[in-house]
Length: 361
Image 1 (spheres, rainbow, N blue to C red):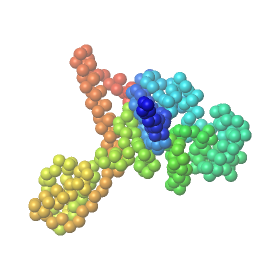
Image 2 (cartoon, rainbow, N blue to C red):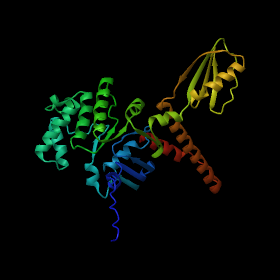
Image 3 (cartoon, rainbow, N blue to C red):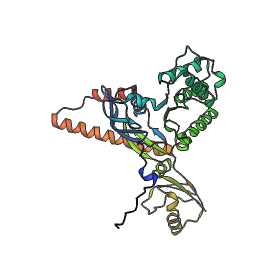
């Protein structure tokens, strides 16, 4: 009798359909005449992540969000939300998103609970379910007792809470928060942090733009830094701070005088303040043994050390400054090439137009 081969049973995990990322953009471009708001942006936000989007004013963050939600039509490239193209399958993409914008774009003529009913209705949610969702969203952000109040009559902090409630009423898979804690007090900021952290723990993907570096450092799994409509880097907050330089301070027995020459390629600069030697270096904790040995060999007696880690804010400033410098070098090189080819100099008018446009973004 022929031998019957055994049946191969694959583990469930190996045959499970892989979900698309929450957001995937490739070569995304958007220009407003002379202003290039997005310039070939590539970015992927994993499903279920808490993802931060950082960048200076005019970096393209809000334009990027507006492309995702259909408020702005891209000029080029591709953008998808959970595999739905934001233009070819607009409804599928938009229904997956809850947006809490930075600006208060709210119907001010109805009580806030009714505004939420209308919002849910726009997304095809039946009336009875819309009422339940509105009540649940208002309770979640802590303003259910204000459900019969018009938006304009709310305090500034309550308005921020309501913007989050409006984003939640459709039970989105992707929650986009554009500067959600701008202008609020510390207590409210921490309350909102707790709400959105709970949502992320429950499986909601969150995209957060913020100017508060502490907010990104505390909340986000990963952070993307963009500048001039392009991605500068993507990393965890810890990975980003490792890109920066730390300050090692060595306190000696007596005043030092001139800054000693320290031989280590990781050391960027050395400064002296009385009996303290301040050493700027990458991974300062790793250079401590080398620095102490060299100081002792030079006749100094170290008594104590202190290490100040670089902050995410410092890394952010450094990376965006480098990007701006690279852009300036590229523009200067391009202008020089054009001048060499045409024999004409730059009269400055075009540069002035660009600066004005950038400032207005």
